[in-house]
Image (cartoon, rainbow, N blue to C red):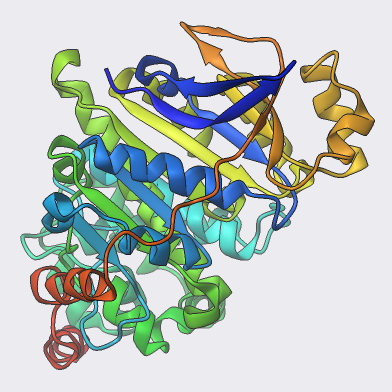
Length: 426
């Protein structure tokens, strides 16, 4: 079993290494703290240890700095295990299709996740911007697009409502009586006026992805460039660079949400494997509140038995919807806090007794308090200090080699991708 190091504890002149055991990591870790206090450093160091220990990992980074650091420190014997998903590389786009499914169970799960993603992006407070009628249209359209041997992508959904020939071509593969009824009894009997009114509202939610070349070339491909079940079973290294400065906030959020949805679908497939075959896989997500849907709650409580260890972090608790916050504090075995504000300190001081509110507020940079899962039980709170990352171990050529390998192995030439997508639209 591979233990990893989180940091060090200094107490009464004695320095002790804070170790984190594999079986305890499957109970997950949550880290909170202001910007610049050392959160990314902790997860970078932990992730690199996993990589050096030949473990499988996924690191989702909304800034890019952690991915850049990791790329410069990947051991040479693991270079070919790296899958680098960088959407800003527009010349060799990866495919990432949320509507690509290989079973009826996976299909239903991904359609539900697709609906949750639209809520997250356009109506997080459930005010009615995305409502029952939008859900109904999207669910039936998505199931129709997925029918047939060739499947389809998210950006083809609007085409169903404006191209009758395309609609009929997809409908011939339908077997679900409810989806068939949607087209034959509901849509066919809706007046042109009401259909047009709803269509404008419906299609407006797709426009910014369909009209954005970067996004269209990624989510418009029918085949995803990588499969999460395969990545987990073969202990691969998935590095997801969602630098908001390069691709924009909403694009980063959309892609992060799809990545986590596909990961959850891959995790659920492990239900068919013997527990001994479920190799541990470790997920790291920075600013995780931007990439979580309601089903993330069940992932926290269920994924432990499927071999997924989740490590999540953000800046303050108020960023989290109440149900997500309650799930995190209730289901995560290890909680680590750097310097936080008064409101968060009031909440965590109750979890970390006898640590006082002032103790959280006055923490120096790189210092933290932690309640650590040890042998299945959460410890009393104690203090720790993060370990500064080493300087890059390998030359810049190593990073470039990984990038080149990924372009050729997982990406597709932009000209070819656009030709296929345009063909699907004509």
